[in-house]
Amino acid sequence: MGGRRAYQEASRLATKENQTTSKWVLRFIGKQRQMQKQRARQDKEHNDQHALLEIGAINTQLLDAGAKRKWLQVRSIDIASRNHRIEQLNFFDLPMAGNDFHSICCAMVINCVPTAPRRGDMLVKCLLQLLRHKGMLFLSLPRLCLRSSSHMTARRLEAILGSLG
Image (cartoon, rainbow, N blue to C red; front, side):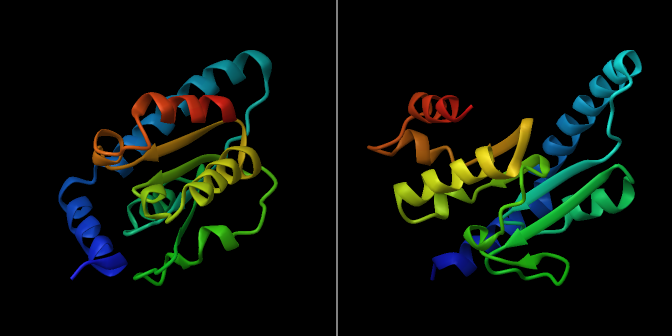
């Protein structure tokens, strides 16, 4: 027992009950959108669309939210998709989008990338190649990855992310 399939099933069941990541992401994006609208009234620059990339999607909660909100465009990908609405695609095979996304949701994914250099590559690609300037990266990983690791701490992760912008 174990492996990617078991991890995905456990994650799917947990989010079915709690739905914490998608609710938190949507609430935060909604607040940001309201602030942008208020600023836009003053300087007349506001794009009404918000492009969100979901990496490692295990359910369609964000896709469903995008379908209900005209302003939210969601692209959900997973290396082993179990839903026809989620693109089956390895993140590392995702073409460079030219900083097309306002937000990227990477929940419980980076901890599944097998090597430190590839995890770094993932962060660089998200922050410097896919995410727009002043975009939002929602990064979530198991607390154990920071508490029980001999190689990573919360402080070190913050330093790494800070160095990338």
